[in-house]
Image (tube, rainbow over all chains, first blue to last red; front, side, top):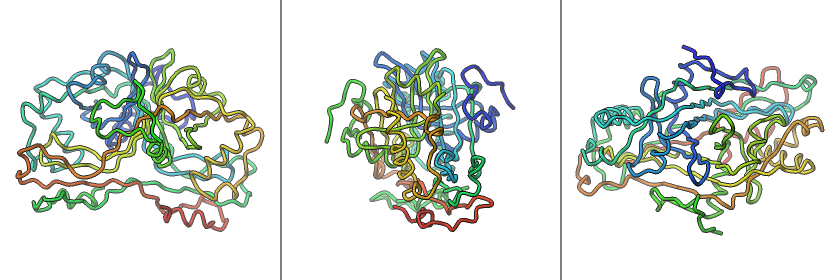
Length: 213
Length: 213
């Protein structure tokens, strides 16, 4: 599904890289561990990073009940941005260098997830981070759930920009004798590190961490 | 050197992870390919990702002369945030899960880099991305430099948060029979991909890409 861009999400710079498909937004949110949220308060404009996850067509965040930021996010329209850098693009001219990346900008207002839905959505968060983990751990207590606020924002008003592939050269540069190509950057999962003093057998979902697609 | 936090940079949540040292800010900026910038205009609050680099105690960005954003960034105080995710921290309880990360928030106003300084600072940008590259490529022309705006912001008003190490358990959870530890996430440099039709010898600095610290 594709929604037409709003005045806030219409991409003006390098517009040929723009995408407004839900599927593109969903894939970018699913591949991100954190998002950056721009909002304002009496002290000015802020850009705060926080963990995020997706359920359906919403992006979710969580935090402490006492958080100043979470209160502000329900009182104003904000912008949530995710950026995944995939590589450096080296053209023959300095000017035509670029990056390969996938980014999503989401506009809207956060709403509070009802208390009754918190345990299930926090379990979804855990499973999105480490599939299989939720069944293994001490679940949240009523007190812990009460101390946690979960917010969500619809992905209805979102714009993505995606660049992939090799360099685009200026006309006339094709014969310039410089190497050109892509230097890839990838996020890689490292070997699990067991906490000091923990003698529990390493579960399959931890052994699988490095093998996950 | 450490500067005292301002009312905007004093970290209130998990304050024991806060750092205000220039050396910590510099290391985070140097390890980042992109930053996120929060600013406002007539359409609301925005959070835009853009490439960044550092010279001395300033963070630099660049863009097209026609960019709406660059104009706005010189007219208001903004917040520039960099976040590097280093791993998932798995505690025995859902509630005590966390992430290892390094983040920097910088407050201030961007200023324009004078035209005469643009070629040198753009060369510094190139060298920070790929050391050795600048000498190999077609340098920017006067027309290309004229089409490019370079802005910088001082790192004087910055706060970092850094979390590293294993999980911190709730008292009483130490004997819960769940695996605990860290699942690392690392940014890795992939094998260089030569552009189609480019027959130039692969230079040493490209061969070194994957070996760089």
